Picture (cartoon, rainbow, N blue to C red):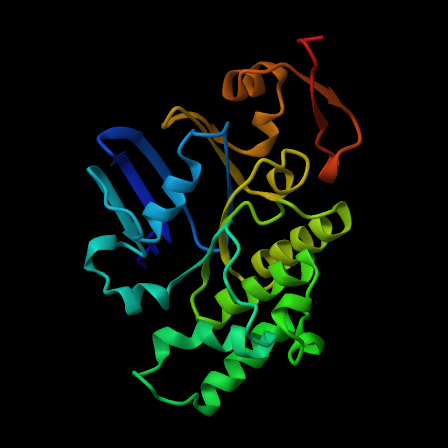
Length: 265
């Protein structure tokens, strides 16, 4: 019986931007239905890695394989049916209702100027249902709270129909209540719906604790790769972020609460 290849496999990846090496020798593997959190200080190459996996940036070395196939072998619409990307930057959408915005996620399945089919509408309904945003479908995007808007952006990604979900800082700029809502949503999509999730995050007390594995980047290279239980050591966190941390009991899923130290004290 053959074994399915990893959903994502990156080997010795190198990426240069403006002749500067942003990623150098990065390896990662994400199996089906798993969740990977990518962490590191600003400028470590986290978002570059995510965008490279989605085919949005050219690579200068190494390889990326999606479901066992070289990334370069996918046409853009074919890849968009496999991978959905939720960027950190706000998507211009103020002129749309929630439903119209989520419907745009069906673009890989539509011919030019074609109307939505019954299957497209059902896919949009399912995306709204999974993200619990159906009650917002007639509301203007500009009338949404930050948490509602993020859930709708995830709904549009789900409407694409792929089961690999890439997210860049999905809980940034949200208050604690909305952060928890997004974490719970991603956890449900991963554990109950089978989505493979890769997320860049600075949230050591939330998404990192939910993930199956962690990739820590420093200056474009891998400084840590392993389960969250191995990450929560003051020495390892200091190596990744260049700062001292205090670890207290009582965090999410039994992991420590991570607090940056002031002046190393």
